[in-house]
Image (tube, rainbow, N blue to C red):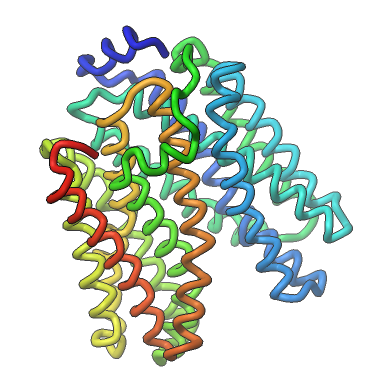
Length: 394
C-alpha cells in the first residue's frame, strides 16, 4: 500500500464492508476448523496410545510454526499480494487437515502441524492487517471487537461440531477441510479490495516487536494467560474441589466473558485518544482478578462471575492491543507489525503453560493464580512506563 493510499485510509470514516466481510468470514471459518481440529487431534493420538508427553510436544509445534511463519508472511504478501497469499494458505491448511487422517506414522504429524499452523498463522496475520486497513480510525475498536467476537463464536462452534460427529473415520477431517476451503470464497470475491503492499517493510522484523511495545506486550500476556489458563485451569479447579463438569462450566463462563465484552471494550477504546490507558486498566483488573482467585475458589457461583469479567479483561488485551497497533502504523509498517503481534502471541502461548505449570509444581494449586498475576504485573509495569516516560509515543 502506498503512502498516498494510507493517507486516504487514515481519513476515511465509512466502514468498508466488502473487505471486512471477506477478512472476518475467512478467518472465522479457520477458527471453526481449528476449534474442531485441536481436540480431535489430541483424542486420536490418545486412542493410538501415544504418550501424553509426546502429544504435548506435537501440540507445541503450533507455537513454533506460528513463530516461524510470522517473519516471512509480510514478505510473501509483498511479493505475491495479500489475497493470493491468503488463498494459498487456505489450500495448504485444508490439505494438511486431511493429511492427518492419512498419516499413520506419528512422525508425519510434526511436519503436518507445522504446515497447518504456519498456514493458519499467515491467514490470521493478513486478515487482521486487512481488517485494520479497512476499518475507519474512529470505529477501529468497534470493528476489531466485532472481529474478536465472531472469531470467538467460531472457536466455540468447533468443539460443538466435534461433540456431534466424534473422532471416527474421515468425516471430521473432511468437514474441517471443507470449512477451511469455504474461507477461500470471500477472499476470492473481495480480492480486488485487498490492501496492496507496494513497499517492503523498512525495518528488520524483530524491530517491529519493540516498535509498539504496549501492543506487542499486551498480546504476549494475552497468549500466555489464555493458553496457560485453558490448559491448566481444569487442574486448578479440580484441586480446588470442583468436579470435571464444574471445571468445564467455569471455563465456559470465561469464554462467555471473552465473547460478550469485546464489542463494548472496542467501542470504549474508540472514545479514547490514547488506548494505552485502557490497556493498563484492563491489565490492573486482570491482576486483581488473578490475585482474588484463591479467595473465591470455595464458591462455584462467585468464581464463575469472577471468571466472566476476567475473560473479558484478558481478551480485551488482544482487541485493544490490535486496535492500538492500527492507530499507530500504516502500510507495510502495519503489516510487519501485525506479523510481530502474532509472533508475540505465539511466544506467549509457549511461555504461559510452561511458567504456570512450573509455578503449580513449585507452590501448589495457588501457583496457578500467582503465575498469572506475574504476567499481568509485568504488563502493568511496561504499560505504566510507556505512559509516564514516553507519553507522546507508542
